[in-house]
Length: 308
Ligand SMILES: *[C@@H]1O[C@H](CO)[C@@H](O)[C@H](O)[C@H]1NC(C)=O
Image 1 (tube, protein in one colour):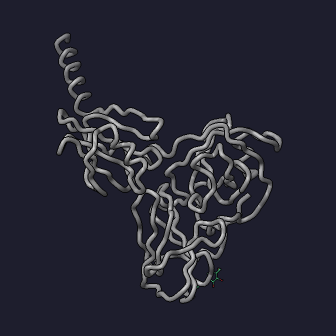
Image 2 (cartoon, protein in one colour):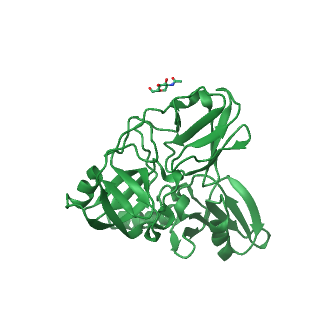
Image 3 (cartoon, helix red, strand yellow):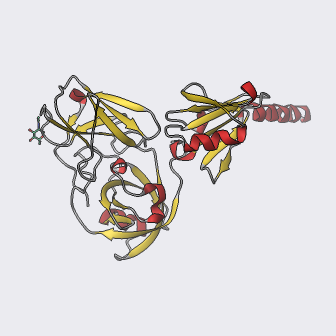
């Protein structure tokens, strides 16, 4: 029995060395890093530099979501793009590797928490500025997202329309959906959301922590493209948005080489000019990756969901 215990102990310590990556968090550069690990593929660039500057350089480089550093050529930093999770890291023993993820792009983690954010009650029944289409929603508790400083990276922008936030206003975690803007304010919680978040406090003010999650707004899985207007076949004007992105933030769109523009505080991109249903729209994500959709695959989203 004693022998068995000893060998289990040895086995466990070997497993720990091989499998467990011990992550460190760098608050200043908002990234996770660890020794003896690497990520496969998705290389953007490689630059010679020392190990300490690799993560911070990735953090400051548009599109860089994760990185790996090795002693190759006296120290080389591989900057990498695309969706990443710390769980994708693989162990490389004894070769001086360092790898890491930039926190906000790591969907395994969601975004960092913003604390002590002012929240108020929004007593309305409306579609909201995001003009989200009527559909089968997985999250039905709406919020009008503001832009006060305490919101940090979560200040309202069209890219947050339809994204799922996790709040805690003292009564546990609650997942809510961004359906509207609340410029000048904090979290304006619609009645249904306010009641659950505050345990039915009378209207007033409260304070919440809030973070971005990688949950999808719809019950379906995978990307969903919608036309905002009923004119799904108007050759001269398109207004389309990509939703259900697993927390990826859409920061741009191109149709036949032309950049789309937001017309309103929403997640749709407007294009003027020619194009058929057999042309593709390319949506660009904040993490540097993109996704292309044929116009014919975008649904009629002119019927809007009403939130309260
Ligand atoms: C899109 O839906 C709206 C509302 O149901 C409808 O009026 C419109 O005709 C539809 N557009 C097309 C092209 O089917």
